[in-house]
Amino acid sequence: MLDEPLTRDDLEVFFRIRKKPEITDRRALAKVLRALGIRLRGGTTRWSVVLPAVGLSEKQDSAHWTDLTAPLLTARDVAALLGHEDPSIIYRWEKGKLPAKAPPFPAAIDLSNGRRDARAKRWRQAEVLAWQKGEPVPEYAKATPAFITARHGATIIVRQNDDRHVFQGRIKDPLGADIEVRAVADRDRPLHARS
Image (cartoon, rainbow, N blue to C red):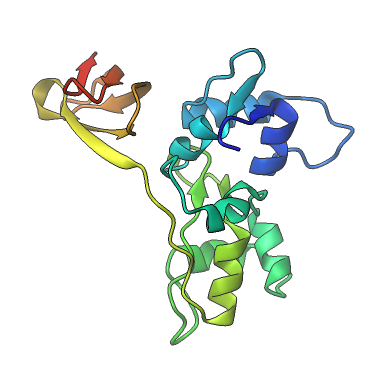
């Protein structure tokens, strides 16, 4: 299942991007894929690329597979699932402004790569339902971060897994300059980066 090809249509369904089926504009998907560092090869990608892009390890308990590959929920979807009309309450809960004695709300998956006040956040249905029932939120294996140091002491967090992968991104170093990073992680060699 990890090697199952995912088309653009599959990704739009998973990330809940396309609001109406008749809309064929793919700019929103391209923006999300760029923010998450996902590159399509031949118009497809695989779960082994998507899972680390959203902070999860490729190696997951098979019992969680259905939950992890189910389409993510928008704030409007979560509000409807929980019986609320206004989706803004979900963003308030996500920021920690919960009703008294409520457990922490499940963490959102940020599809905007940290853009300030972006409302490109999604939630997993299994986590939201567990929160609603007062049950423990499912635990998924997280991607292992690797730490490397760029010029002037800026730290870059790069997702790394057991196989050799290349990660790209941009960071701001302490002096305020943008640095483009290309990091190569290999099981047999230490992590190194070029800027």
